[in-house]
Amino acid sequence: MKGREASNEIQEKPLILVSNDDGIEAPGLLSLAAAMDDVGEVVVVAPVTEQSAVGHSITLREPVRARTWPFRIPSGVIRAYAVSGTPVDCIKLGIDKLLPRSPSLVVSGINQGPNTAVNIIYSGTISAATEAAILGIPAISFSFCRWTGGDFEASARVARSISLRVLERGLPSGILLNVNIPDLPFEKLRGYTITRQAKSKWEESFSERKDPFDRPYYWLSGTFVNQDSGENTDLYAVDNGYVSITPVQHDLTAHQYIDDLQSWTWEDETSEPEKL
Amino acid sequence: MKGREASNEIQEKPLILVSNDDGIEAPGLLSLAAAMDDVGEVVVVAPVTEQSAVGHSITLREPVRARTWPFRIPSGVIRAYAVSGTPVDCIKLGIDKLLPRSPSLVVSGINQGPNTAVNIIYSGTISAATEAAILGIPAISFSFCRWTGGDFEASARVARSISLRVLERGLPSGILLNVNIPDLPFEKLRGYTITRQAKSKWEESFSERKDPFDRPYYWLSGTFVNQDSGENTDLYAVDNGYVSITPVQHDLTAHQYIDDLQSWTWEDETSEPEKL
Image 1: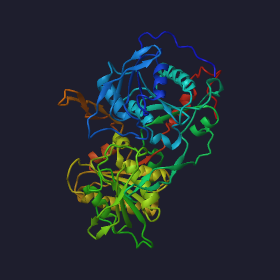
Image 2 (image 1 turned 120 degrees about the vertical axis):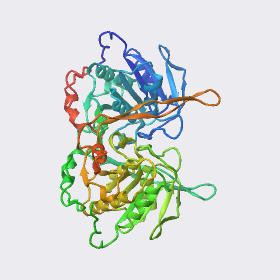
Image 3 (image 1 turned 90 degrees about the vertical axis):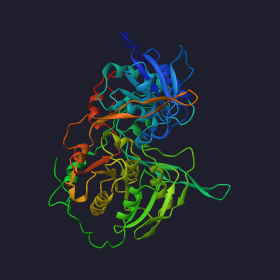
Image 4 (image 1 turned 45 degrees about the horizontal axis):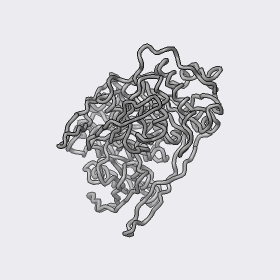
């Protein structure tokens, strides 16, 4: 892909909240904060420990703590907080208590590993962005399609570029972008493509073991099953070298099934369910 | 509402997995398991501790343990397991390791408190049912719209009735039912109605406190804001005495926004993003 210049000088620097689910020490968070440095004023609010697969979990039964963190990007030390809770806690606490004003953009990541297909629902990275979308703030989740190590440079350039676009164009209320970047050098990326979430599931196979006291325990493991042969999916895009951009919403209603359900016989009633 | 007789004798008893997020000792779980007793063969797999608001969290970094639990319903002691993880862990582990065969139905609840509007995304009760739907098993989440105490009898009757219908009719792959029951005696319920999730959010106001060592901590609290005046919503239904049935899906793609995103200028490219 060709590079892209920064857009015209921004009048007032937009405030950008950067979070993740891999924790405040994750290399992908550092790459993302650095990539946002000339896009706006950056504040990092991230979990103090890894929070992968916590989904949209929030901390209700315990207090949450936040402490300032010496977060250094190439241009210097920026404002950062390490939070004892989940990614969603970070967004809620950041916006309510830690940030100087409401952010113009929330970016989450860069996740170590893809967040495609059914994995969207388990991902703390995406949930951070989802929470921002619920609160009416444009939000983007970025994931680097490599499980360990690697070079986040291409992903960071993509993140900067898409963030600039979203700051220019905005996003509809309640919709965030889920971006997955293949593990390729920037020049080898084949471009951006708009996708849908591939249909898939995990086939579990818990590993059953015995502890030193002969008591059983289980570790979750499993095999990912792609049930979707569509070429407009997130999985297909990243497998074929494209940056995948999926619009994601938090309205979980299966609108297409409402009419069918209305037609069921609701035998406690004299007729169909009352339509409100 | 009028009562409903059990359907014709079922040839082979369907296996019903009962779970929740309030924990294995919650009264709503007991009511739900008892309500399923003559509907099928019931196995309970529930978290050992309360897991409200854990969303679709799964346990990856620690092992999960399951122990048999003396779960007594009016007809006697039934097979039950208390699991050290989240509601989603319960479903995954139950289906992979604990149940004698794949269940015909997964029911989750009866939750103490409503799961309507934006709360769907935070709810462990619903996530248990969602996980079953991902795995291709018909699933229903039941919630009693009262935050503490109360009588689960009407909710249990509704749960039994809807479960019988779902066993008869099935559900499309990937779609579950989210049922909310008002806090009214069964006779006062105005009927069933099919709804959509109301648009809403929580406006956070973290309570900032100091611990005995003068270090700050935060408790999450907030005000629920209904942003939706629709009369076909889950909130409207339960506020007006109806049992609300919302079909819920786990495909999070905002399909309606894909075309808009395609039309954005993707300036790293010479033209629009490539359509796969």
